[in-house]
Length: 476
Image (cartoon, rainbow, N blue to C red; front, top):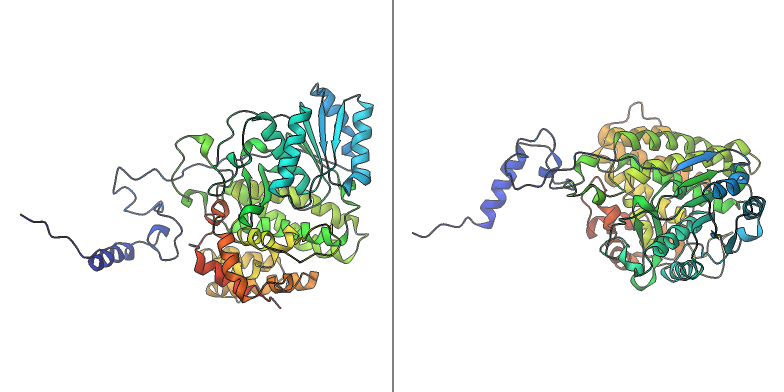
């Protein structure tokens, strides 16, 4: 007896009927996951269905906060019995007080060290490899990073590949651009001394770089990369040029927004078979929400003040804390579309040179490239959590008293445009030389960013990314 096979149309109709009885993300057109919601009657339908994520982890570096705290770093390394310390910095910071303070502290504690001064601002695979080669040749037993996120990320990579001396650069890089190997043994001590108020890299296990062969930014993300200690000394940020202060502050803003609006951790997908494989970027969760939402409120008040008045030291100090708060938030919750799009925008940049940044190569600062798509991203993601989007809009100064939930995206998008324009942020990606004809190449560069795109609260593919980029050509 032959068995009748249902047509594709009948199967599609049946799935719509099943989905119509349930509003969990697995059954909605806007869903990003095949994991059923906690009240969904279908989640127990098959014993073969992988168990959905049920746990989240909280990981962060120890931080020490205080004006002048950098002077203690020599004692920290002496306490560790460090014999060969490798200090990382960039050519600019190498001339400034923060590095001098670190070196003097190491000398006082009689800790032997070498200084690597060739960190590239906005690192590339080539600059990462050069730092790794230098570290492997020196054989340090501890690392110090004095600089912004570029320096701290470079030191993280050098640490990782010194411990795993036979590993290839792509072994630990996030899939699909790399092999996504897990870090299964401890790294050497790393102390981070941030000189910007933005990346929060002193609190996270991420290291980002530009993979030139693919024309895209990518990175390594593993809790093992976290610095042992982050020294948050506001004195180290006093020498920041204004445009660096702006770009790093915008990075804090977007870290907070994206972590707070990311897909909830229990909807991210199946639970890992081994907790070692649980990603550092887990999705929004009750702990990361606290840090991210508080960081958002700090940035909304302090960043405009810090940009308007270079002598507003209170605002500068607030931003150093906000960067760490947001770092703890997104370091566990993750980021999504603003950062995902930024990796293509900065990775494919061939000619734009931002003021007050190094001029030896084309450079669109990370925080700037993240912020320019924030209005369009907010308009796209708002339907999945309109209340949070309205909350963010209110923090940024919008009157949401009579705002409708269905208008949350428009309200937040407009609030972000006003905020960015008030700070003098370039007017969309067209300001970097991109046009409609570049959208296809940008989309191709962005699509491999699985680590962050999968944390979008809405399903995101080529069509959605192209739309975000089109709407981000000009913001004002």
